[in-house]
Structure formats: C-alpha cells, structure tokens
Length: 266
Image (cartoon, rainbow, N blue to C red; front, side, top):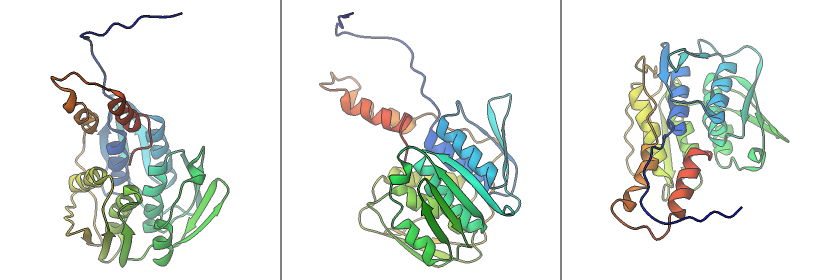
C-alpha cells in the first residue's frame, strides 16, 4: 500500500517518557544511601527494570508502588556469598554498578546479553584492579570481587562518560578521600552533570577543577523522600533549533531522540 504524505502543519500531543539516564542515577544513589526513599518515575523501561533487579541482588529492597513510584530500601550490608547481577544489554548499568560492587566489597557476577559482552571496559577495569578489585571475564559473564580502595584515579575523558559517573557515585562510599583526574576533552559532559545533580540531591556537592574531582570518603547518601524523574528535558532541547523555522532535515533530531529514549544512555 502506498500512502501520500503531504507537508504542512501538524497538531497533536506527544508523551515524553521519564529520563532513563536520570532514573539510573537516582536508583543507584537511593540503593547506596542511608534512608528509604520513593522515586516517582513515569514508566519503567527494560533498562530501568534491569537496574532495579541488579540493585535488588546487591541487597536493596525495591518495589513498584500503586502510586506509580519505586520504593527503595537501601542496602544495609554487602551480600553474603556471590550474587548474580542480570544487567541485560545495559552498558550504563554495568559501568555504574561495577565500581559500586567494589565499594561494597561484594562478590558479583554480571550477566550480559546482546552485544554488551563485546563492548569495552578499558581503562575503567584497569583502574578498578589497581585499587583492590579482581575482575574476570568469561563469555557473557564478568565476575568481580575485592574491596575498592580510596586513592588517585585517572581516566581519559574521550572514552565514556559512564566510567566517570560510575566512579563519582562509588568513590564517596569509601573510607577515605579519593581524587579522580580526567584527562583531555570530556565527551558527553551533560551526562556527568546529570550525575552531579543526582549526587547533589543525595547531599553531596562535587565541583570539578579542570577535570579533577576531589571526593570525600565516608559519605552517607540521603535522597529526599519523593524525587521525581524528569521528562526528557535534554531531548527536548534538541528541538529548540527547529522552533519557528522550517527544518530542512529532521533526521539528526530524530536520531538524537531515538538514542536517548531507546538507546543505552551515557
């Protein structure tokens, strides 16, 4: 069947889903925190469900509420014995929870699906192993053990912002001060800002100085009881150049929206 598409003005309503990237960060901070909190998230994607399952395996109690929220009771103690973390195809979940597992001193086995086993972890893996963790990858499984130590960490800024975000959320849980130095140009810096916003909401304000974060140890995260996961504000900003103009090509905008809503996030 051939349908004719005629250019012209359109009207209607578009539902913008909750930010998956922000939901990941708030859930991690809540599970690693000190107090029970409920996070309001309009819609639970496959990746957010994987986040909930992994945090639950690490010892957090997480459940959906009738009001559309996610109730999180924090991890009270590292799990006894080895736990299985079903991170699916979520690269952000793997890169966020690998340092967190080290901060907890947990023995964990990450189960990866799709193309995730092929995606790189260097140089994050080298930094983790240099500071007390053991990592072993076999096929679609990544096993980790050992307790992460505070110290000086270095990462290049042009590999993945998820490496930086994972360390920013995990290092404050260690018993001493750490320094995270990011060298070169930082890619996807907006996602690192989003991580900083989540940490600030949890009570920790970190201000980098020329790519260097000085991170205190012994921090206790305390999120407000009902933080709300925002809609895709970052995605909506991609539409601003089109306001009041006739766009010659919508493809870059559509691609950017698809990457944020359906992709892995940063």
